[in-house]
Structure formats: structure tokens, C-alpha cells
Length: 147
Image 1 (cartoon, rainbow, N blue to C red):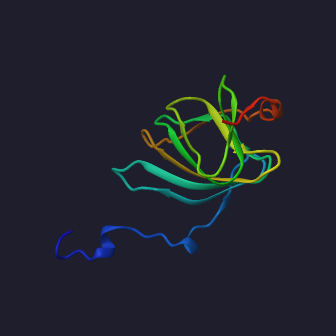
Image 2: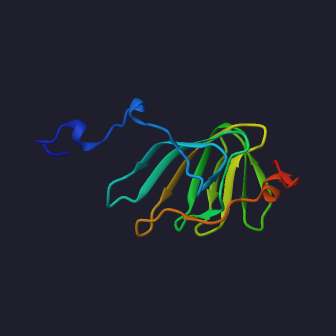
């Protein structure tokens, strides 16, 4: 920090009351999903973060991240699944690494809401590739890994 720079100029503080939740678009989500505290760091950084709230039964569409994604479940109970893999239960405190370029989905269970913090980086300005909706059949498949 230079002598002319005040401590508040060296970082940005975004107050909670300034962060507005937006409804997740139906092109990316099934059910009621609300995204808040959306933040994308200024260049040269390329990290973004959002808090995502899923109502019971709500979920993302299939998607992938060119540089991966980290999820931290903070409330409720959810499910996540990579294409071709087993649907896995996720709970508060669980940390999920969604591998680079791997097609997956995540959301609330049909009987619980779920909130997670999502952190991802953008590659050439793009942090996510969206695909088709997760079918009710795939979402409700009976096999769930709980450990």
C-alpha cells in the first residue's frame, strides 16, 4: 500500500444489504432458485462467487465449468451427480469439487431446501456451459449415495 492509498482503497467491501437475490433463469434451473451475493472479481482475477438457494425439488440443469467449481453446502439437504455417476446426498458443511469440464447437476432434495456457496473461475470470460434440464426420472432415481 502506498502512502497515498487509504486502507479502504485497497479492498472492496460489499455490504449484505447491497446484495439482492435474483431468480435463477428457467434456461439454467428447474424449480425456484434464487442467486445472491453474485460477485465477479475484476481482471486480472477471474474468480466468481454466488450464494444459491434452492427450494425443495429445485435443481440446476446439466452443466460444466471449464476450470471446475467448488460448492460449500451451508443449509438444508441436496443431491449432486456427475454424468454417468451415482446421485450423492450433500449436507451442511460438505465441500464438493466439480471437476473441470465434467457435466453435472446439483440441487435440493424433493423434501428439503438447500443453500450452497458456489465458487468458480472463468476461462476467456466464461465460467459455465449450460446443457439440457435434468429429467424428473434422473432427479428422482432411487439410488442415492449417502456416505
